Amino acid sequence: MVSIALLLAVVGIIDLVVLPSWWVVRDRSVLAAGPVPRTSYMRHADPLGHPVSWVWTPIDSIAPVLACAVVLAEDEQFFRSRALSREQLKHQMNAVLRAEFSVGYSGIGQQLARNLYLTPSRTPRRKAREYVLTVALHEALSKQRELELHLNVAEWGKGRWGVAAASQAYLGVLPSDLPPSRAIVLASMLPAPRRELAYAVGARATARQEAIATKLWRASMLSDAAYGATLDRLRLWRSFARAGGSMSDAFAAVDSVMGRERSPDGLEPQALASTCDTSRRP
Image (cartoon, rainbow, N blue to C red; front, side, top):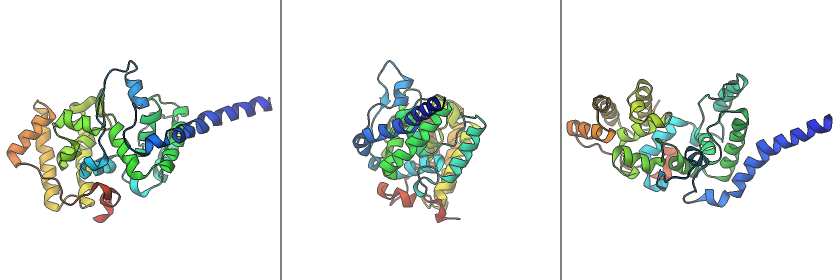
């Protein structure tokens, strides 16, 4: 009986710890730079392998205001914490103890681990593998690279993956050309990407958009005037979007009323760790 229990324990450790760690070691050179192949989530979403809307975009070609909007929306402590922050671990371990495996509150590292290697199934096994993969990715990659991967493989709609596909499909612009209000709307969609516009104009996304704008102001990415104008643009955009039409049409209507929106000056993708810092303003 002891030997069987020991064998099961060894098999469990191999399944939950050794295999996920090996996946990252095996793929380290691919993960380190440039595009990655289709992810596990992409294959699971379309097992027949149909073409998907996915264009790889280096982080240097992504507007810093968008990269920071995603960080501040999804994982505010991303650049300042280890693979799993204490707050994330506490929240998720409590959820696991209550058998609530569908609970959210996953940081960027965990979302990346799931997208690259796992499936949407909500089980203790997947959650355990997710923790191991998150730590392994953290040890193998820089934070900047983790964010670059996340922005390129996150789902932003049914069959739509990564920020380039999202920004061009929804807004008709390259991810390098996204000004604050458009970046905030895209970042706010990530919790429910397949609901697209219906979610983006809803109550939860509205609160999320205003919170992201506030965090961008606290990070000094938006001046006082730009912060107020961004909130006005978002409110006007939602009113136009709810009346019908596409996201891009609604933003075009906002621009016709308020003028063309400018992106913040002097922001460099290489300085995201210091830029996406909400401690700059109390």
